[in-house]
Length: 68
Image 1: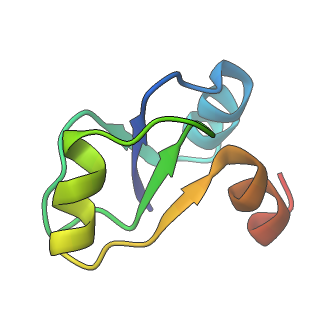
Image 2 (image 1 turned 120 degrees about the horizontal axis):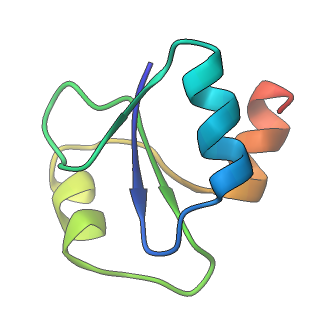
């Protein structure tokens, strides 16, 4: 799974994702599976993800979805 963080990164979640062979990317493109945003941040990455119809979730939502 390819993931982009937008805003402040959840370092614990990032480390766990990487240890499970998920790729943390810096830029939005059509190969990204999820954007994980911090609770208050809306920025350029969010706008790009919306345009490409990439799912956008908070770190809390992502953890609940995937049991992290």
